[in-house]
Image (cartoon, rainbow, N blue to C red; front, side):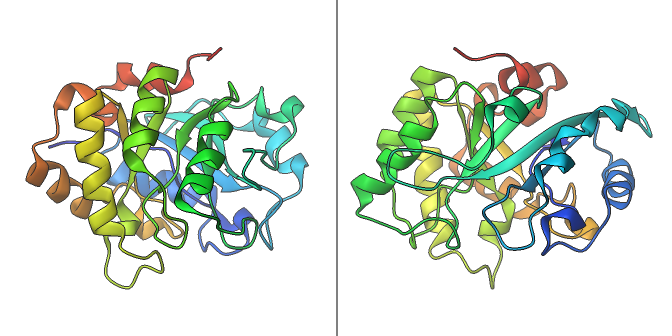
Length: 238
């Protein structure tokens, strides 16, 4: 299985990642990707960049080293109502937003409250991907999430980092597996990302590919297999 792009990656601008944008792009090219997206954390996380970082993406070429370059951000869901920490004036300039739950910006509630937080975030037309909904620190109902994502045209993320030994997320492999099964039941589209915080992880999807093959995930629901399917993520919603 050949995956063609990686859209959840972090540069040094995130404050807790260790490679430059140029180093990540070079790593993506070496990995044989055809497109690369960067999605640094927004302001709620310690060390995250000022909004001017996202506002100046116009200087970054759309083609580098044979790769199509996409401009994104990983926003922090802040509450049960799905508010997140990026202004609309900036969000509308980006190709995609990934909405995620993080400990520095979100206090976990019940399974239903956490699910509601993501469902509410999905109502924003700028949210294209729900990031790593696989962490029992913030348990969610993946069946409900998958059903709503299919209806709203949002993709759920199979996060390769969640599947690695030593990941701080709790029960990532089991929860990711259940998410894939729920997505298969509801016809929900999935995107595989590395969530890399260093260039050596960009474009390396081994754990995710093993899980996809294990559950026999339908290729027609997997974004990364066709560059044309980037339209699932970059097209306007709402």
